[in-house]
Length: 64
Image 1 (cartoon, one colour):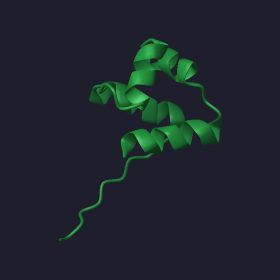
Image 2 (cartoon, helix red, strand yellow):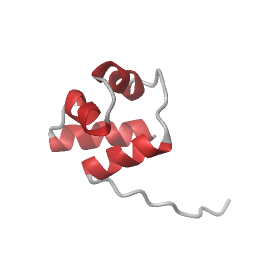
Image 3 (cartoon, one colour):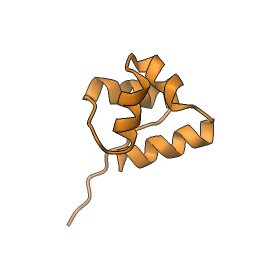
């Protein structure tokens, strides 16, 4: 779910993976593997991505 939100935001804002990778301090291949679900990034890196892409994380309590 997070990857899809990031992909959509990148597309909408016309941000390339290499630019996003550079901003958060990882290489382009690591960013590509993350986006394609082949590796995970830590919370700090994901928060940096959200800030860069201006994504607001909203957590809702969903009753079952």
